[in-house]
Every structure is written in C-alpha cells, then in structure tokens.
Image (tube, rainbow, N blue to C red; front, side, top):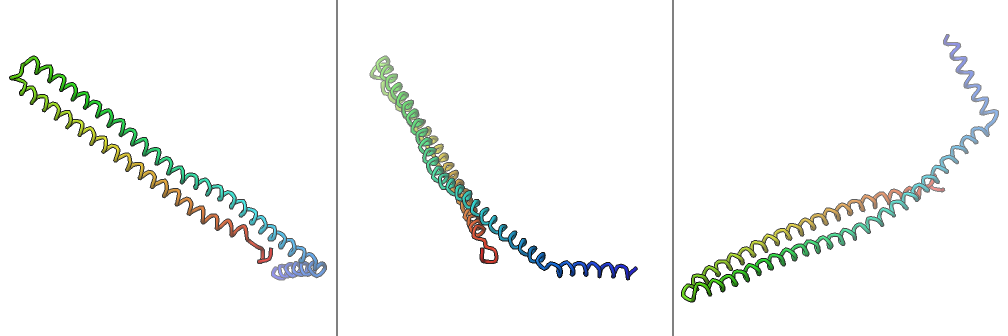
Length: 192
C-alpha cells in the first residue's frame, strides 16, 4: 500500500520534471503572464487613484462653497432676526405712543369737565398712566432684546457647528486625497 502511493507520487514528480525539462518555455511563459498581470494591475490601480483624486477634488471644491454659504446664511439669519426685533420695537413704540397720546387727550377732557380745582388729581392719574405705559414699553423692549439675543446666540452656535463639520470633512478629504495620490503613483517593482 505504501509502495503504491510512493510510486504514484514519484511518477507525478517525474511527470512534472519531465514537462518542465521538455519545455522550459512553459515556466517562463507562466512567469511572463504573472509579471504582465502584476504590471497591468499596478496600471489599473494608478488609474483608479487618478479617478479618486478627481472625485475627491470635486468634493473639496463643493465644501469650499459650502463654507462660504454658511457665512452668507448666518449673515442673512442675523439680518432677519434684527429686522424682526426692529419691527417688534417699532410696534411697541407705536403702541406706547398711542397709549400716551390717549391718556393725555383723556386727561385734558377730564380736566375741562372737572374744573381747575380738581385738575391736580386728574394730573396725578395721568402721570401714573404714563408711567405704567413707559414701564410696559420697557418690559416689551427688554423681552424683544432677550429674544434677539437668544436668536443671535442660536445663529452663532449653528454657524460654529456647520463650520466645524465642514472642517472635519475637509480634513478627512485631505487624508483621502493623499491616499489617492499615493495610489496614482504606484509602480511595479519601482519601474513601471
């Protein structure tokens, strides 16, 4: 049993040896095919690296534009928040002005009906009403300023987060670009 296996193994070795001794060009052809495959593989890898570089370059350009748009959008959001604040302040001033005018007009009418002797009491009531209107305006103005401050802080945080995200993405793409450049310069055995 062992003899048969050894004979078979020896026979195959002899056949392989016989094949290579009969045609030494087969081994060289196989080596040549392997070399050509490796060389063409390196060429394909270089081409893939160049394609990656183009794609990454496009992404980097888009991120540049996105960075500029973040600044523009933050500016537009700030202007809008300030416009809303200005409109609210104008409305509060208008309402306060109407209230003060109405109180003054009402006070004049009461003074003329009550008479000169009692006009001091009417004047005190008018003064209290005017104080209340001015105080109310102060509260409205403070509330509007608080809302504006919060909006501006939100805009600033949004802008910072977007810029951070873009910078992180740019760093990642920079790394990928270096990898693609290395791939595009890959050579077979330092020759091709």
